[in-house]
Image (cartoon, rainbow, N blue to C red; front, side):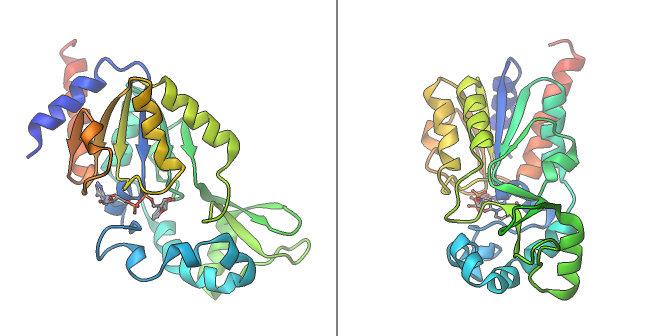
Amino acid sequence: MWDQQIQDAAHLLRPARSGVAFTGAGISTPSGIPDFRSPHSGIWANADPLAVASIFTFRHNPQAFYNWIYPIAEITTHALPNPAHYALAALESQGRIKAVITQNIDMLHTRAGSQTIYELHGHLREATCVNCFTIFPAEPIIRKFLDDRLVPYCTNCGGVIKPNVILFGEQLPAQTLLAAQDAARKCDVMIVIGSSLEVAPASEIPMLALRRGAKLIIVNLEPTHLDPLASVVIHADAADILPRVLKLMEDTVHHGG
Ligand code: NAD
């Protein structure tokens, strides 16, 4: 299945000089981390992240936020990169793509070996006191939280500690967003993987690339609103498709293409 589309994707990526990957929660579902919008498996199905994962809830009822994030924190702590993450890291080391722009907070691109990563929605590497803004490494804080399930407090001032993830109602990190937009404007091919393209402003980035003449490849289980504008659309599991694209690229290298 999808043989022709995989060849078409490899054909577009082969001459790419400034390819960029744009990833969403769907690239990490094969690692066991549920996405927000897939029917049944999504986190969305059990609670409304717009309500719980918002900066307003966090400020007024941090324990409600931490109760919601508990299973996600637990899964993410133990999750490992899957073949889709590794394929992107390999495409970067081959020079086919220059960067990964991700909406994910799970750090699996880093763990797979990708080098240039723009984490538009933050990450679980660090956490910050909302009162005195001291930044802490997140790992010991998450470990303690997984044990006691309680809101973590700042050891300096007693303020509530928030993981460095962007909640609904918060601005995206400006430098990261600008750098990602710049990479999108300059790219010749963008491969979108596992994103419903429904969360703005991140979801506007593929359109930026398209407007500057980049070709779009979409690998997503479900249709997206940009499918009609894409050069290649594959509705299948990214962890199956991306290694197959990579394999074709490697065969090309070995055969001198
Ligand atoms: P989304 O949940 O809105 O959409 C995910 C898309 O991925 C869906 O359209 C689904 O069809 C597709 N998908 C699921 N599994 C797939 C697979 N194996 N292969 C290919 N496609 C697959 O996700 P989004 O667009 O990234 O936006 C959700 C927001 O939630 C983001 O802002 C992100 O910050 C956050 N989030 C992050 C994580 C994470 O870090 N892993 C997990 C859940 C949510």
